[in-house]
Length: 147
View 1 (tube, rainbow, N blue to C red):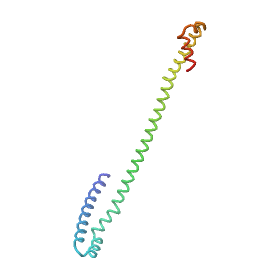
View 2: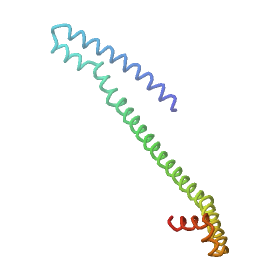
View 3: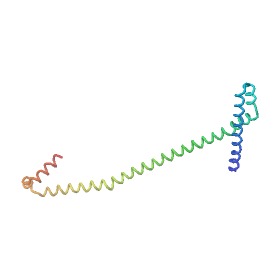
View 4: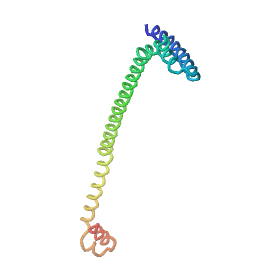
């Protein structure tokens, strides 16, 4: 049934353009002649003008209204889909950052804490008088307190 309607609209539009061409030709002939008012009223009340007006008001305006509505619906769907996709991507990004934090960063901080505790334990086993005698150990400890 949709094919019949489409074929009918093709025929109607072809006739509409042909009528429009004829109407414009007649209008140009009227403009070139001197009897503008009388012939113009005759042209505007002719069967051709009435058919053009009927086609314009009945079919073409309704078709363009439907086309405009389809375009608006398509744009709204596209924007909604873009917003939804952006939300999923942002959620994935947040999830990825959380996974990196949980698995990589916390592991790194844990290993760093173990290294610090191990260094403190090693330093606590060295006698204090030896720490003061060995210049590199003494400089390391003094430098660590400044930082």
